[in-house]
Image 1 (cartoon, one colour):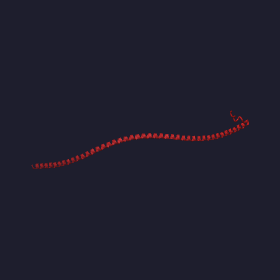
Image 2: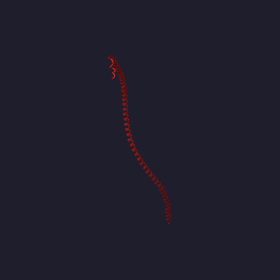
Image 3: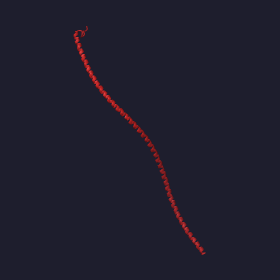
Length: 167
């Protein structure tokens, strides 16, 4: 046979006390849960406020970082533009240097040509001096010959005159 349930053999008044005690425990439990819930809610509100402050701080930092990124992008663009300008200037200078080098080589070649021509002219001058010296010597010899011939001619004319006088 089955055993009787605990409430079956108990009087109704006892059951009512147990019910009252259980109700009081339940009320205490509910109040305690409410206090804990309020405490948890307060902690959650504080945590939520702390998180909101953290988010606001992070948003400020993010704006600062974004501002820095934009500034750095602008600086990078400026540097790129400056680099392009410098590259263009370098190319122009390189081209100008090549032209100057070509001009320098041309002038150097012309100088070499002029120096060669000058050497030839100096050689010609030396040869001309030699020829002039020879001509001067020949002229001096001719002058002596002319003088000798003139003297001879004069003396022959003198002799002829004397011969004519004698005759």
